[in-house]
Length: 167
Ligand code: NI
Image (cartoon, rainbow, N blue to C red; front, top):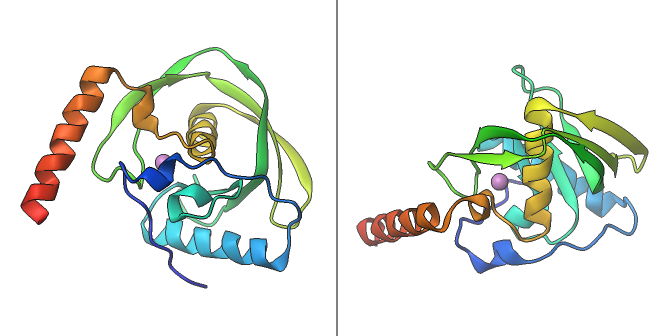
């Protein structure tokens, strides 16, 4: 296994659109293991392949307190959404920044697991938020894209300041 480097916003590589996985090969299974290791080490609750500069439709997630319930979504598709809910989100690619985002409250998702088996999940609560957040990454979107232009301008100013202090 290997720890992968997580790209940080506003890295332009976070804007790439991921391609579907043609087959769940040993190479894809290795990517899943590396993504999981990187997510657990960060630590985070979800990670999309896009965030480690691999542009394939692969997501890992673990929402459990005990950090031993890995969920894998390969080629995820949203079949249906319902309602609307606001939740505070953060992202390993936007360290230290959290803000409220409004999204559909529920999502029915179809995907493949790490063995290439198809499954469906009816997600609500944190799972629904997390799946939609990670699927945005696969489309080249970051959660801050959902914020108002004013909030994004403030975030950019903060990141530039951080860069100056670091550099
Ligand atoms: Ni994220």
